[in-house]
Length: 126
Image (cartoon, rainbow, N blue to C red):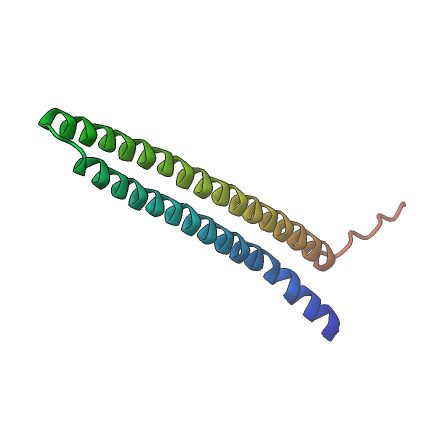
């Protein structure tokens, strides 16, 4: 009896454990993506600052600023796409876990209902 209750308890916690694993993996992935993006921005800013020191005229400065702005915009768009893909993947995985949990719960409920419902007595012939 105790073993059965323990097994049921572990089985009931399995979806929560899977969701926790998905959340941990998602947070780690997002942290890596953000770190990479921030590092890239820092390196680009340093390169931009160095290139600005070498500019002799206003046209060169404006061109360098334009290129830097376009590069930053491009990286932000790409970073947003990566974050969206990561979150969508996590959402899909969580949806599958919930779907599986609902199906299992329905099956268990049907099994319990079948055990509780009295069997129909066979009809006697006259």
